[in-house]
Length: 216
Image (tube, rainbow, N blue to C red; front, side):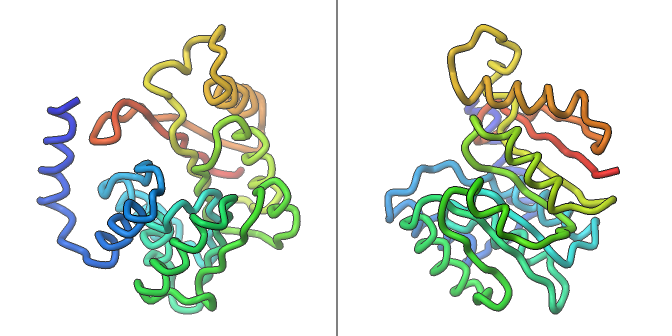
């Protein structure tokens, strides 16, 4: 894993310049005691590029944490574009709001909805052009269903942390996160509304992976 981290550091130094708003978002999240589970810089840049490639004018994020990935996504918006991010924990939401404001994304561009996402999502009006799901894994299938209800043909959906250090293959796992991921894959397997793939990843965040899907 140390070698994976070294490679990530090299890739980031080669392709991602120093970025104070993003670096400060991570520092302030750590100072506030938030868990160190934000996406890596190269993964944040991937989200940014995917959202730009999709031409997203409206983005939905499920799981704000400290707003690090939110900043990457908000930067992909064209003028007049908007992003809604859902965060369960009011403390996390407050840190994210401060980080977003400092990065230049006020509430007119990025709105944070605080509360359980499964309560918040039915109150939203779609369609969204791009959806990033990075919240509690036990509810992933329900989040994908909710995202589909807020999507249109062509919407891109990305779901993070779906390999679980390889534990996703263990049907007998008692880990709710693993079972939640497997339930999501069962949904994807049989849902004709989505065209999806999944990619394994290694890096500074360890061994994991993500789903990339497009609404048909």
